[in-house]
Length: 112
Image (cartoon, rainbow, N blue to C red; front, side):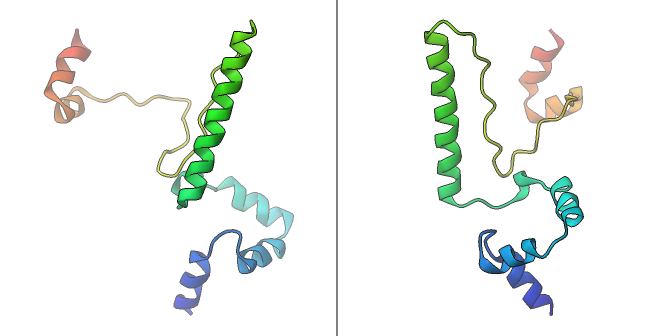
């Protein structure tokens, strides 16, 4: 039973099995699944990474084009990628010990 669960979880999201499972979910179950979703923890293929890079490039070119035409565009946010957690509203600051553990020179730069 565990092996079957592992095999199903390893399927790509666009597979027929996972699509059928999603289609069988109630709207409430879909909302709950979306609330706990962490795209930064999902594995991506090379194609998905390339598409995210292309999307970022198109957004940047759009912003540059608007700026060249006299507009004041806001810089686009990069597409979320695996391994990069979502931005938090609060910024964690490193302690002096953590900075020193990373690089002793950082301690001097932060204190100055």
